[in-house]
Amino acid sequence: MRPRLPFVALASLLALSITACGGSDSGSPPVQPQYQPQITNLTDSFGFQLTDVANGDGTLSYTWHNTGTMASIDRSSAISAGSVTLTLRDAAGTQVHQGPLDGTTGSVSTVAGVAGDWTVIVDFAHTTGTINFRAQKQ
Image (tube, rainbow, N blue to C red; front, side, top):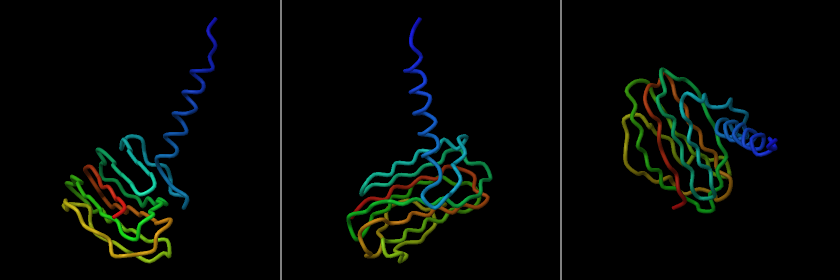
């Protein structure tokens, strides 16, 4: 008889991965799996994508470690309805960027802030489509 440990370990890792994709340190609820969440949160690089959102509402908050004082934000969402706002706050809690992600593509830079643990907030209301952006140390 084969040991079941590899299957149990894989199932536990998958459950941990799904739980870690949503929410954050601020207690946001997990992102619904039907939105196919793809969140990459690495030092100096943060990526976010929710796919096939259908009339979705929510506010998601993440802590992101940026060793720089500015970030470049690459926006490439495809939203057909609703609104999406991205807000970044630096390690001192000062807002360094706020702008729409719906109907807006291309790159923008934040204003200068304090290096350290930044807060990334994605707020979406009655949104249909794919929400996608990346923030990187500049």
